Image (cartoon, rainbow, N blue to C red; front, side, top):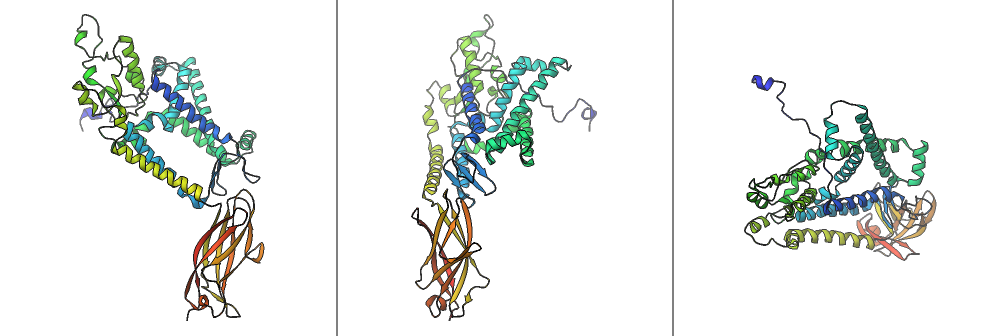
Length: 481
């Protein structure tokens, strides 16, 4: 190794230089503000929406009931065995991400990703406290920690901690009655898990949104590295019209301004970028397609009397057409093409299937588990008995009485019994609960079912009030010949 490599000035990695985006106005910045307010509002306020859930559960519209492993969303109730609904929603989320990326690049990252939304919020509060870009840069480069810098730092971190605390607090409210939990948290009576969860979420929110910021998108998030598979030459993404902007210059009179392009090299696009990149260098992994550089560039074009769109949403197929002086494709042709149509059809298909499954499902449910030790029991009169464990779920908001019967062989009879009931064919199940009962299915001596090895039959459970019934196929084991 050379002496140069051993010198203290030589570094394998350079230290991170914090990014302080400049404030900008424009339609894309306004869109980001609106989306941020809407999404944060939904997140923070949803646990406080009331919804009548009966005497046994909190009156909360959105509730994750971990104790009973259920999820409530207004009138929709998802039980543990209905996890396919969650799987379907995850598939729709993935297809939606593919669809939007193939149509307009990383607009999810630029507008709706939680990391982007909370980072925007933290940058906003930092700007309110420390000032715009130049003021924050001066404060950062100030080596001496005087009283003013110390005060601003303390104020900023206190606000960040409050935002993180509100974020963690909002999350735990989804798991129990929000008003009750809030009182318990304030009075110190909440479960330690609630305080621990809030502490972890507060710390991670401050770290990811306030400290790490763009590093999460660049180094931790896998999406920038796989997004190219969803994009092609017709994907709309933020780009720089170099054929119009180059060569760059200040456009000073008498200095060859007529030979310069429209770009005046003002660095406005770089100064507003939350990722700290220069879009004029072309597409980069760090770009989240937030389009703030478009707003900044349009603002400068207005000031110097040049047409807008030097930086704009565009596709690779537009570049040769525009260089040749032709009109670029309409936006709708970029969006509606075979790839995006396929994603849309798949996305809609999964959504329609979930909606159908949601409204087609019954409010009662039954699972059957045969008891195979022993396989069958011979009664004193020669009858053959099989034993089954039935799990009956009542998804109604009130107690219901269910009647169980069997079909498939007229000689088979069924009786139910558990620790709370005597023998019979009906059993009461409380609201929003599952009850396990034992079913005894018998075949008379000498009957076909008793003398055969296997007899297929069907369990039926019926709710007389709602006129609903569901069935489960099973097998009766006889003694054989």
